[in-house]
Amino acid sequence: DTGVSQDPRHKITKRGQNVTFRCDPISEHNRLYWYRQTLGQGPEFLTYFQNEAQLEKSRLLSDRFSAERPKGSFSTLEIQRTEQGDSAMYLCASSFGGVEGTDTQYFGPGTRLTVL
Amino acid sequence: AQSVTQPDIHITVSEGASLELRCNYSYGATPYLFWYVQSPGQGLQLLLKYFSGDTLVQGIKGFEAEFKRSQSSFNLRKPSVHWSDAAEYFCAVGVSDKVIFGPGTSLSVIP
Figure 1 (spheres, chains in turn green, cyan):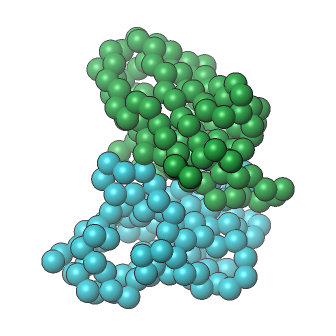
Figure 2: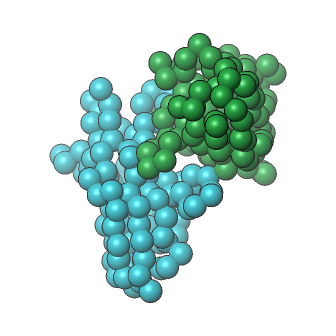
């Protein structure tokens, strides 16, 4: 068990550019989550996958955001036409989803995005 | 709507003193409750969780939390704080397949 990994750890970009982040979950986990965390706040849910299916998206996830998990393993989060308000820490988490209820999520170190 | 409140934005304690971080939640059904800790530049680490059963839950690093349904609370405690405990602490509630986090409490430890 190597834990959840995220790449890159830091990204600085100019307003209007596209960025893509990658998350590799714990290998046996079937659920993968994306969160956004701004300074002084708790993480906010963005979206999650069960295997390759995207099951829910928050209204925080505007049309400029898209997430994929094509083979049910790693996931990517893309932000198009970045805005300064997108500057935040993007956290990925994974879990082994059970039949019902909320399972324990394990978090990666995050990708810190700065939009200039 | 489901929510989590952490009334204390920032707490300072002396090393060796006891600690209690408060958490209140709003959720209609039986909650799944979590405490996570985040150190600077680090990801979130799970301290403990409550799903059912004994309302006093033991976690890692000497932390414990008590679920009180009547007060909708899940306070985190530690009998003796170490300087390495300085971090941001997040209480969270599981709702369906999502986790809703509180705003966090920042803990400073005075040597």
